Length: 552
Image 1 (cartoon, helix red, strand yellow):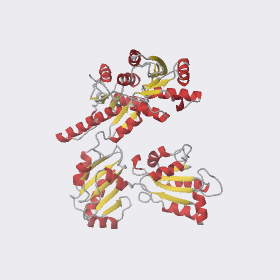
Image 2 (image 1 turned 90 degrees about the vertical axis):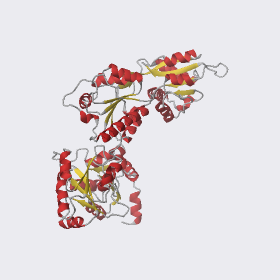
Image 3 (image 1 turned 90 degrees about the horizontal axis):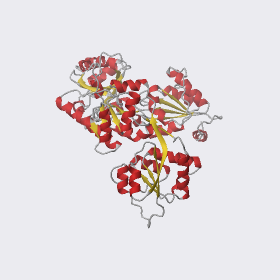
Image 4 (image 1 turned 135 degrees about the horizontal axis):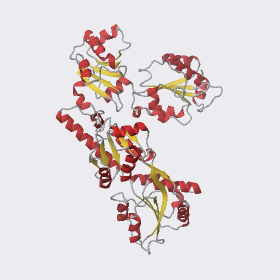
């Protein structure tokens, strides 16, 4: 292919099905943590017309696909072998599509795509390779086992399933750090093979399963004791003996100091399943914070938002907003912002309609929702993010400086009167308008309900009294082993009234302070277990055989 033709092909728009050939990207999705996907991989996925991916890779990359991307393996195609997948790639590329072929780990180290690349080159189809973090490298790093030391130890990578006698002899006779890709049921046999090849039985070894994910577990032992260690941990024998593992063998692989270097598994909420009774939109930043602590958040909406039964009051208020009826508009929730925004869109308005009107907001998320709308709040409470906190900073009505004495307050149908009463006391007239209704959400799936009642969750975060009442109403009472974390005294009181023991109370009424308080609680549990010489277990792992009623 000429350089000119190659340039034309590279510039071919996504979805083009003309006479030109397509383009294939062999993409490494990394060892499992979605955060390890490279920026170049994200760019390639956003441009893909077709994605051909093995299941482990698909779970990592699917969030970055553009709408309409064809995923034949996930859409029920009968491709079950590597050759079938290669045929799908070739057919799509021949039709002028941009194809991404995603594999777990790295395309060059964890798979052999050479034959596929040669076949594409033979037909003049351009391709590229986007490297990913290889399993052996990424898993060892997440396990806290550096592969090199200051003296520059040699590192050998061995696939236990394909290594020949010469390979075992070489690594057995050397003092190199050996990174072995194997499956759980072959670990003991691999250790014995290394010993018979010359490695000492007291050579340190670490074994990691589910590396880079919140299911990761690592055991430290020696070649001579690793089988006993895994049996003592009740990992072997196992019906899941075919699970992939990474074993790091060697005196210089820092196994002896793994307790100090295991940064991932030592996160305060590592592996905790945390129930967040909020919608995905409300819980986005909170869930991200929980993930940074090693938790696995699960969002379960307890409240559904619906329009007011009679929209006329909102219609009049929005028209008054445009015609200059109000000096202030006060938003006390993200839902209030969303309700006004939807009404604006209905009338063909945008953020410019707020010109000349002062805007107040309670809470960081409410302020952020306004900024996303194009409106920067003039007033956000400097102290407590609540109606009371807003009143402390709100200026009293002054006829000299305030040409208009009226405030527009769009709110929920069940909001309290605290803000209205306070504003009236300061001389303001308030149009207290129901912008939306809150109703109890539908029950979550049966599997989630059973996990809540049966102790499948390690913790639950309650961000208001209504989330307590609604969760118990739609899903049942959390099991007594579940850690209960509440955002404030009022929420804690409601939880106790429902027979729940409150374990964590946020130092301030903020969802982020609540998550941080839960992380501190997890860290204290970890420290106590280490001091007592006990194996650290998550709360859900301490479930008794029979369920007990929770006491307050």
